[in-house]
Image (cartoon, rainbow, N blue to C red; front, side):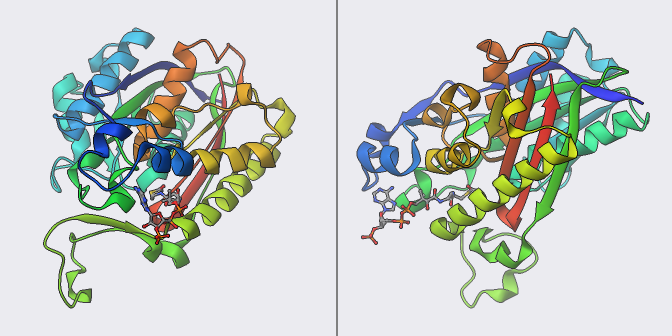
Length: 322
Ligand code: ACO
C-alpha cells in the first residue's frame, strides 16, 4: 500500500498589511466590531496575481522537500480567484516553476478547495499514478471585494500556502478524508456578476461582489466541520483525544471556538492565525499548517485534524499523519 507523505510546505503572504484601524479610515467600521465578531485584526493585500502567490508558496515547499521542479508530476491549485478563466491558474504556476513534466489543474471548491485538492492528489499518489504533487491553496480575494461594503470587505485577505506530497510505503500524509456539499444552501454564499447564469438577474451586477448570509453560514459551518471531523476520526479508528493539532479553516474565531468546545480541545491543540491574515479562503488551511510546522507545533508522528467549509456549501475534513 502506498501513501503520500507531506515532505515540503511553504506559504506566501504579501508584505502589505491592512489593519482594522486602517480599514476604519475609509469604511464605517471599527477595530472593536471586527475583532469581537471575527477575531481578525489585520489582513494582507497583494499587488501580484494569484499564480504568483501560488508559485512562491510552491517554490518554498519544493525547497523544504529538496525536490526540483522537473520531478513534480502534478500541480493542483485550489482557488476561487483564477488569474484567467481560460487557461487555468495551475498552468501559469507550472510555467513560473518550470515544472514542465507536471499535469496542472485548478479546483474551485471555495474555502474547502485545498482539502478537495489534497484528497485528489493524494489518491493519485496512492494508486501509483504519480509520485509527487504540489497542492496549493491560493487566493487574491481583494480582487472581488467591494471596499465600500463593510459587511464583506473586512473579512478577507490574500495569500497562498502549499504542500509537496511524495509517495512512501510509510503510513504518512492524508490518511482519511471526508468531503461533502450541502447544495441546498448554495445560494447563501456567492460571488455575483460573473458566469453563464447572468439571465437570473433583472439588473445584472456591473462588478463582481461577494454576498452571504453570515449567521446561516455560521451555523452550517460549525455543524458540517464538526460532523466531518467526527466521521474522519471514526474512519481512522482514532478518538478525538488522539488529535495533537486541529488546523481549521480560518473564517471566524467564534466558529473555531465552537469546534474547539465541541471536541473539548485545549488552546494548544488548535491552530489559529485568523488575527493576522483574515479569511484567505482556500489558502487558510495550508497557510495555518505551514505556520504550525514552522513554529514547532507539529512533531514527527503527530495526528493532525483539518476541517473546512466554503461556498457550495462545500465542506470537508481530513486526518493527516505527520
Ligand atoms: N463594522 C461595523 N458594523 C458592521 C460591520 C462592520 N464591518 N458589518 C456588519 N455590521 C453591522 C450590521 O450592519 C448589523 O447592524 P444592524 O444590527 O444595525 O443591522 C450588525 O453589524 C450585525 O450584523 P450581522 O451580519 O448580524 O453580524 P454577525 O454577528 O452575524 O457577524 C459575520 C457577521 C462576521 C459575517 C458572521 O456572521 C460570520 O462570521 N459568519 C460565518 C462566516 C462567513 O459568513 N464568512 C464569510 C463568507 S466566506 C466563508 O467563510 C466560507
